[in-house]
Image (cartoon, rainbow, N blue to C red; front, top):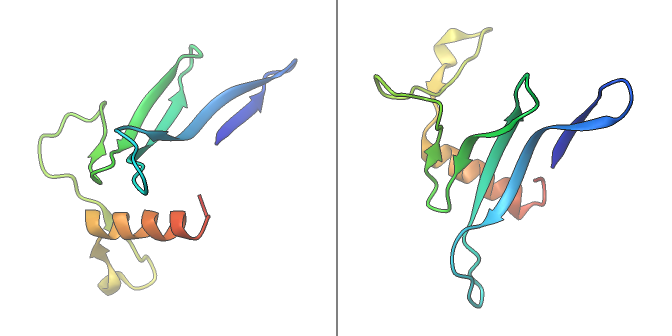
Length: 102
């Protein structure tokens, strides 16, 4: 999937989400990854995040100095705020893929 923007004369590619095979394919097995890309101010497209076939999230521009904290924030009821785990993300993507949402 690719987002495009009109530059005044033509539509140019912008951000993208790619679904790629990244391993040996066999009967009933297609290992894959999800790649998120953005286009910077010079027009160069860069991979910014990859979710691997193992469910790992690779953020290459991120140099960790502490644990990555992903939270679900509820501004109307802060007591409902909770952390989202990698397992939650895996289940979300599995559901979205299984139901042809992405």
